[in-house]
Image 1 (cartoon, rainbow, N blue to C red):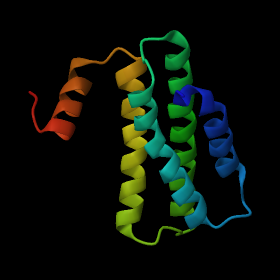
Image 2: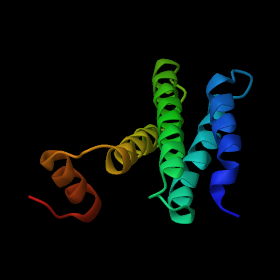
Image 3: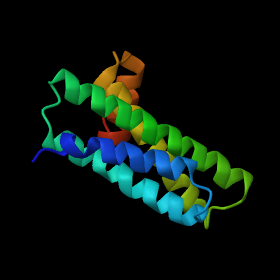
Image 4: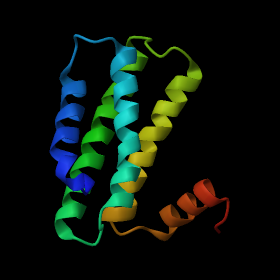
Length: 125
């Protein structure tokens, strides 16, 4: 069974995490981080050339990116990150999601392509 059939549940979970104030920051951050790992699984398990799959991917990446951005803002404003490393990892995951959107859903400038090549593979002009 392809993951696309479960995407509505994933999007619902991401929305629930974003809107929940009943759970601790650490619980919501951990839940969000776990959901972001499913993005790569989604890409691996689905035919990304299909329009419906690509649209669902975009929705998933944007929603998780927005939730992550809100988590960073909240973590900074409430001093809720347990460490500087946790904050940096969260910010890196948000950038990773933004890069996913760029790679799959936008035209990429030469400058951005070189930046990604340098950051990910250590090569580029």
